[in-house]
Length: 269
View (cartoon, rainbow, N blue to C red):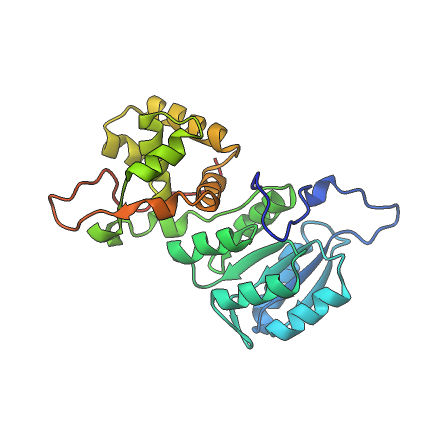
């Protein structure tokens, strides 16, 4: 998923790459959600991945932590952000602090752009909205099990007009210097800033007045410079390097110095 591992470090190999001994019961999941119907629905979906799949359940954060400690061979945890003992991203922090080796995907009814990005930055390997259909859930989970990071497109394309002028970012000299040290050109630095704003390739084309082919080439160069494979990983890598903190909000109003607008479709490349 992300080239520079988080702390504490997680296993870098995908579940599909792991060797299961003959007669193994198959994949093991932990579904942590306080709604019985949600757990049952996810359980039925997970069984479609492999009939031998074992699904453990937890209705509270404490139960989820206890269950993982008792079953450290769990392949993937599906964690709701809001259940007894858990409120928003604090529950994710608490679970990962107690279970640092866990491979985890958030399954939540709250999936605004900030929540999704923050969850990924904190260590989640994916974020699946509860409104997703069964086919999307299956595809997302298989993608994560194969070593990817799944980010849904909904929060980035559903309300692009919602971002205010003071939500955009302006490049600073410190940002440019640190990005240039990674081998990025001035234009690629502009593209990186656009990625950090959550802008899609189409929006970057419009904001920087570039052709689509040129934008794709610059995005590829940014990913290569950061040693990652997807836009999501690039954002996480840039955050670890402290690049976002070196940007400053653009002034609000029609005369603001800016080259980006609303969030875009941030998902696997």
